[in-house]
Length: 198
Length: 261
Image 1 (cartoon, rainbow over the protein chains, first blue to last red):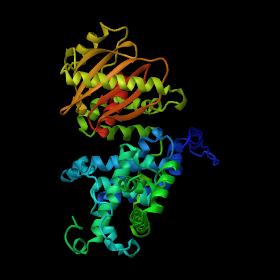
Image 2 (cartoon, rainbow over the protein chains, first blue to last red):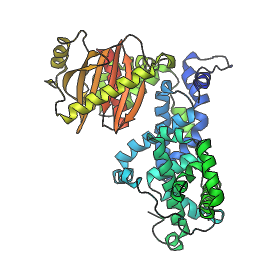
Image 3 (cartoon, rainbow over the protein chains, first blue to last red):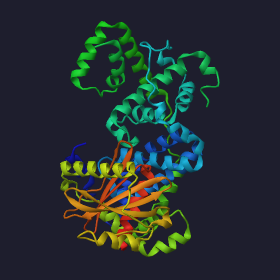
Image 4 (cartoon, one colour):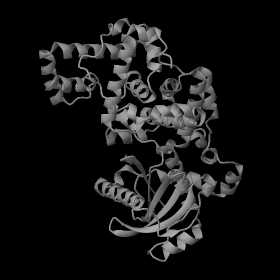
């Protein structure tokens, strides 16, 4: 986003009269940020992998976003999503310390080897349930990159900002995520086995 | 272009993230190599299948209603809630720190500075200098010239050696121990460096007077997190290998405590 577009967004004025001056920040927050509530919830839901934890994380994240609303520059959606992610990371360290193993970057550096990849069935025939389970089973760093790219349709640049890594890392994480997904969906033995469910 | 190289570019290609020249080069390669072309098609199908079939979880209506209701209506509530969130260490700390809570709103406002006042070249140079200083000090095990957890020892020591008196905040109640201070030379001037500790992580805070307010910045270099903000005519650069979340908390506490001093 260009600087000019930034200032348009930041200095956007609202035609409605101010009935209660004190509620102005809340009203601006509701207009700029809350339209992205579903994006926040969807990301939190995919990160935590269950409804209850997602509700906790997203509630804390949105309130936190409001507290830091003055820090918003540029587009609201990636900004909110980065707060959701940070809130999740704090949450997971406190509530699911065992899961922090997934943050190991060594996982990311595994480079695909063979040229053609495994024989996979045509992706259009993927069973919806199996696909969702396979995505949920991806390690965190790959899962979040995939969700931000495919479900939020964000650019590599935005994903890099949200996940706090260079763009090249986003690219390798996405490649790895898709490849892991193809592998877990392509081999019938894996689908019915225990590997899909962690 | 080799098959290997082509395969490496496929993801960026289907995501529309490849620059035009590389795209053309890759397309020429795809036209001649059925196996890579097939891999590309499989990737596209995979991407399309995810977009089509992966669940997009919508917010439960009751949750959105609850969160909307929980958002405070006025600025006073904002600072109070913000403050409570920053002091999860307990009621004792919250009580002790409460007088500074009124500064929170001020801090929030100060935090946001116009985008246009930055000189990227200079900021980049300073970022590199503070990072280098932090790494040098850590490597040489010489992180501070004066070792003290007492702000009333560190501050006079620094003030006696500099043309300004840096604010030295006591953040021990929030889990950030002051361990000492040192002098360094950044951006062609002598600066104060306050050294804090969080678990095994050292946090260097570089402080010196600045003329123009600059925008808050965050970046990550070589695994170190770096934050910059300005407060009451002082510029602060915070460098550490501490994680981003805790360093954010630290920087915000510092901004508020700096105002209270």
